[in-house]
Image 1: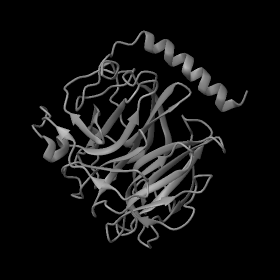
Image 2: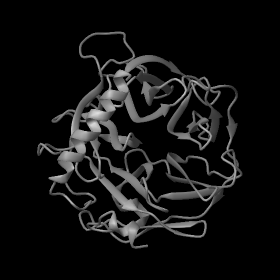
Image 3: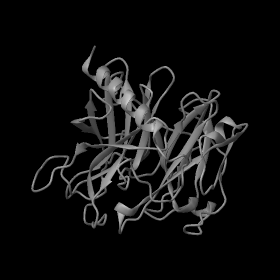
Length: 344
């Protein structure tokens, strides 16, 4: 048995046993989320994948007491769960380097919005993250790439690339793996803010060829999260207002290259923790949309509430998505469970 297969099996057995004893039953948006050891979950701007019956949550670790201006990033943290409610700490799976260094992983460069996918052909977990190099400002943004044999790392940094066919690269992005295993990089291009798409190579490590503009996607569309239901591609995204929240955007297309159709802001209700509603996406910004295993039409919209002065305290919003034809709605709920999908 391959080492990573054995590791995944042991993790699955361990987590199923722990979940049977777990107390948490509900998801509470914008509450303080703690792991199984009672520590605050520290995984911002990331994603959740399912592998071997276990969910893995990856996100930026933020150092307590530091602001974004003070370079709060410490690396990519991973948590694992069998039920999406009770999470077990797997530690830092990609560490940034402290001190004077010319490495792309220097702590005072910016590493944002990590996304992880599994490549069945190479049997590698591939991580992507937005990368601004140390001391170079935000005019040029790379995509950093790291790989691992295991979902819980360690991930080894491989290289960086400039996406979008632009010398300035791309900003916020989604990495979408289609049903046929093909991988796509969708992102806002720098500096013109057009939204573009490019297919990745079969090994997922570099773009395969040229990018093209996604017709119908509004310029200045950021924070994209792509998912697919009944043959229709959906994109949940935001506008471009820096750290400040703005209205969510929803687009659909029959082909991932487009044309895309704008379908409005799907958010409804008010977040009682900050009194912000749809015009501010409950105070959050989209990161990812997760399809729940073994549930029909079960998708979770994942947002972060960004707090640049105190990023360690940034919060998470997870809410179920409801469908009506090609339209979706994301209704605020103070607490909810996966039973919402069984009862629909």
